[in-house]
Image (cartoon, rainbow, N blue to C red; front, side, top):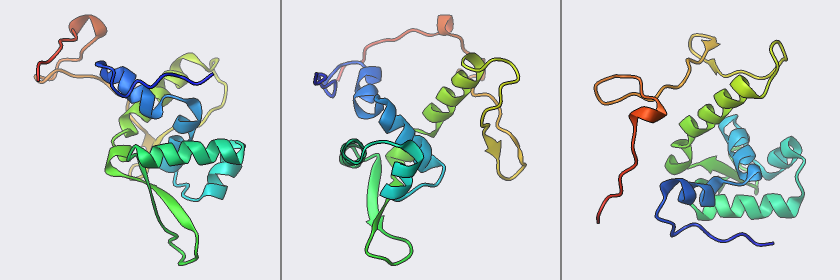
Length: 148
């Protein structure tokens, strides 16, 4: 069953899900943030069928999240790199990672963690803060529609 497009939905969450909402796309982005660049690397990491990977990569490129560039080794291959728009998803990916760490692993079950390269320490938890620095919870926010 083909899903309906949400690209014109008035909700920013719906539009974001239209661009990156399927699990293969998110896993491709995870791997891109981890430094994978070639089709074969994504294929090996994900174990996904070539046709599915091809469709997802093409969509991420069409949506301006990834771009294709000549291979860094000078070969005839192409590589996929994150665009500015794609790199801006870093906080989203870290938020998903941290939520998964908090709610999907029993205590003491090994899993990957995100490390600050410079300090070689765990990355601090994401927090949403107001303009004046207060930590915000869901009850502290409201969605308002903008006009034009």
